[in-house]
Length: 160
Figure 1 (cartoon, rainbow, N blue to C red):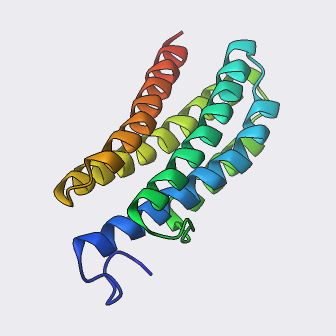
Figure 2 (cartoon, helix red, strand yellow):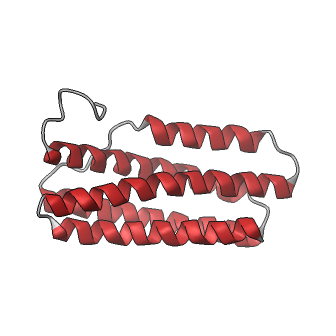
């Protein structure tokens, strides 16, 4: 079910669908981060990815809380966008022998993931508020804050 299907009729339907989208995305990210940790050569980058893996697991737990608060089943829907970002990251990283260049590619891939998550969480927060669900918005805001902080750390690591 995509954004422009007959299955989405209300803002609530769209909110739940997007919640399912980011839930799937976070699960895929958690599955892919160990590979990024393994490929990274810079110790600081490895540690940053490890920290973000822990944060991602916490974000998944928060999403499950939002589903429960909203009275919806915690389940994911396929997200071709995150699948494509992660596939591209894997393909690019697989072609690079130079460790510094590989680390730079991993940072770029991680930033693409972060930017996707930032857009989704920002949108979900706005819709939660429109739906009168400030409780859900505040939980989602915690995830958004973590994603923005990770993006900022990656940006500085890229400039280093």
